[in-house]
Image (cartoon, rainbow, N blue to C red):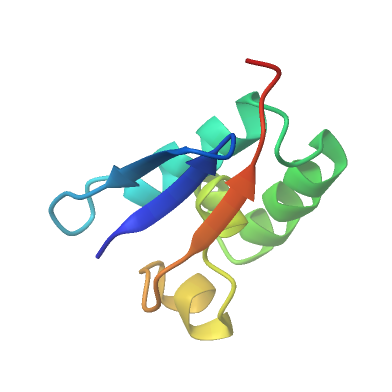
Length: 87
């Protein structure tokens, strides 16, 4: 499964790897660290994930939107996210 993060207008980054290797978590954390999502949203995901016993999934939930993805802890659908950085 490919996760594509658009950086600026002309650069694309794609994450390909084995199942359960942390692609969604890494990408969600990158989006957060680059300012693509605010702290309040991450805190909301952290609380919701903890309620399901999946506290470490807060960054993966930036991309994993489906209820089944969150309940099962796996990515089912691809996710695209566009954000721009100052550089």
